[in-house]
Amino acid sequence: MRHLMSPLDFSVEELDELLNLAQDIEAHPDKYAHACAGKKLATLFYEPSTRTRLSHEAAMLNLGGSIMGFSSADSSSAAKGESVSDTIRTISCYADICAMRHPKEGAPMVACQHSSIPVINAGDGGHQHPTQTLTDLLTILNVKGRLNNMTIGLCGDLKFGRTVHSLIHALVRYEGIKFILISPEELRLPDYMRHDVLDKLNIPYKEVVRLEDAIPDLDILYMTRVQKERFFNEEDYVRMKDFYILDKKKMKLAPEDMYVLHPLPRVNEIAVEVDDDPRAAYFRQMQYGVYVRMALILTLLDIHVD
Image (tube, rainbow, N blue to C red; front, side, top):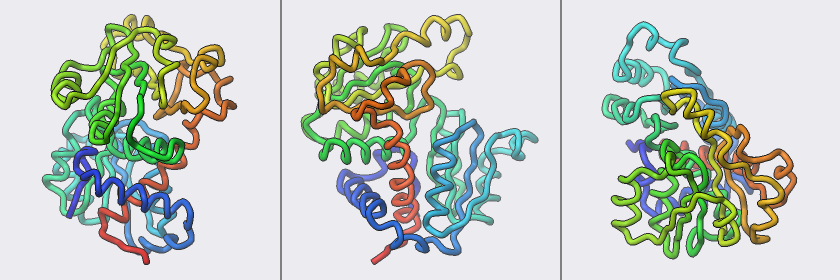
C-alpha cells in the first residue's frame, strides 16, 4: 500500500509513468470509465477548497467509483474533538482511498500512519500540496512538451505558498531547471527551501522584487495569490495583497512561448484581461488536474487498464 504525502514519494521514472497515464486518460476517457467501479473515495477536508476537493471527486466519478466525505471540520466529528488518527481509522472501514486537506502541517502524515487505505495529502498548512504539483507538471509537459531545460518564474507568496514549495521539490530533479524567485522581502522563499534544496543541489536561481525584471527571461510564469489565511494580522495582508498584478502590459514583455500557470483561486494578481491570452494556461491547468488525479487514484489502488 502506498500513500502520497510529497512529490518526492514518486521517483522521476514513476512520475513520468503517472503523467503518461494521465495523458492517455485525457486521450481515451471511455477506456477508464469503469476502472474503479465498486471503489469509494473519501474526501476529508478540514479546510475550505473548491478545485482540490471537487477535482478529486470528479476524478473518482469519472473512473466509475463513488465518493463520500466532508468539506469542513465543522461538519465532521473534529468539531467534537476527534483526533485525525481516530477519524482515519473510522474512514478506513468505509472507503478504499482518501484525500485529506488539513490546516496543520503533518496531519496527513499522521493519518497515513494509522490508515489501512491509501492516503493522499491534498494540502497541509503551508507545507506540501503534491496533487497540485502533479497537476502543474502535467500542465507544463502539455504546453511546453518537456519538463527539463527551462527557466521557471515563481511569483507572489513564496513564503507560505505550499504549491510553490512542492513544485520546487519536484522540478529540481529534472535537468537544466533554473528558477527566478519574484517576491517582496516579506514573502521570500523560506531559508530552508533556498539552503536545503536549491543551494544544496546547486540549482541556479536568482531573487528579484519586480516582475517586469524577470518576465522576459521565462519559459513558465507561476503566479500565486497572497494568502489571507496564512497572515497573523489584517494590516500585513492588506499591505501585500496587491503587490503583483499581471496585466496585458506586463504580458507584452513576455516571450511568445511563455505560459502562465496559477493554482487558483486568484484574487487580484492576474487581471481578467489576461484570460483571453493564448499563453494563459491556468484554466486548462484545472482540467489537467482531474486527469492527473484519476491517474493517481488508479496508481495508488494498483488498478491497471489494458
